[in-house]
Image (cartoon, rainbow, N blue to C red):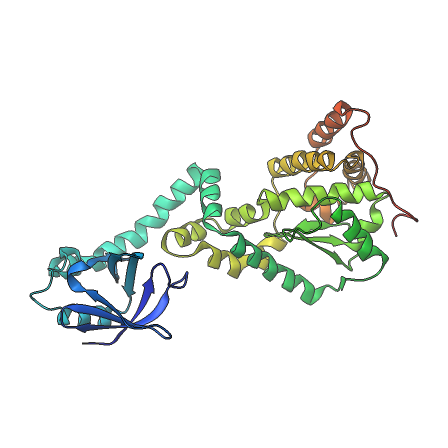
Length: 358
């Protein structure tokens, strides 16, 4: 009987499952996939259960020498046809799948879940937001995080020209190389042709510096301080976590019933371009960025001087950098205290030939 469209999950299936055609042939389940030999599974080895948000999906699971497998059917009509064709002398169907009473109650149970689940999840999210945010962030792979950043970068490039050659682009690249390993592809630095004094980090490692910021720095060390700070926003996944907080309940539900990375990808540009970091995140990026400069032997005074100068010059009309990276006297004092505590020969200014900014 069949075939019915299904999705196979297992050791050699695609991460999101492989498309398959399912048939019942005697006492066996047969799965046929493109570019693969048919897979035959004895009905007696299967475990059946209802899955999905409203238990509308049928899962057929089994194990063999290669590992654990699962086959999903989603269409109600296909599920009904499969169960109707199930051999009577085969392994009995679980009551959760075949019981008429359970099927009659499912619409009401689904209605209760639809109404009650968002309320319960909202309470959980508000009660322990940071733990929930950390949990969701762990479900998103670095590859997906990088895709989210790339989507936003593409949108920015569609409206803002980028500088890829010339003295300014080379200066940015040269300073960046002092902070990250030359062969590292974890970070990618871009120079936007924009007069705003701004820089920002995207999930996955893309860091954008505006031309206005480069021209506002007085030494290579000041630029290095900004880059060290932005690198830490990437390393600590601040942008990703900020997006998760902004997405809130909808993303929590996506984590439970689907792929949170897909939800964030669809909302990436709008959320990232309006994201403002918390003061705790800024202090953390300051602290780790300062440590990175010291680790690389770069004079961290440039970091302290640049942020302090910006804060003093723009009290009434803060530049974009300070509107998304809120300054505070507390942060400035903490950095100054760390600077004062450094050994005299700890670090050196970055060498540079010619005028700065270039």
